Image 1 (spheres, one colour):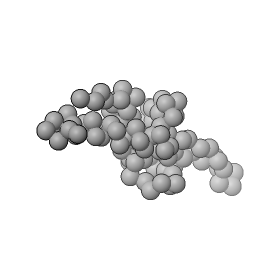
Image 2 (image 1 turned 60 degrees about the horizontal axis):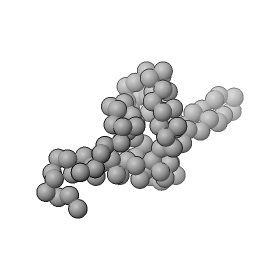
Image 3 (image 1 turned 135 degrees about the vertical axis):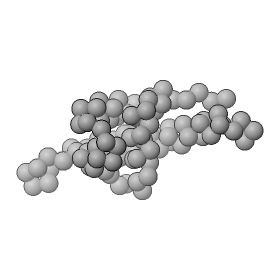
Image 4 (image 1 turned 180 degrees about the horizontal axis):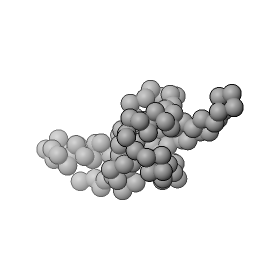
Length: 100
């Protein structure tokens, strides 16, 4: 049986990973939109995004639209693999008969 990735397993980080995994490769989500979807405070979201970024699972980019700073996030290739592995491990826990 596979272990669950402790970086992803925290509820807030799992929710972030799930939200970002729904984006097509190459797409990004702005910080305010992610905050709205997840109903998280800016501070809480920032802390968990930093943890995911440090693990190499999320790419956070800061840019400007005119004079307004914009922060966006996307799953990295490593993050997408880690999330796929995590969801496979959860499925194996829920139905061990389908483990490969």
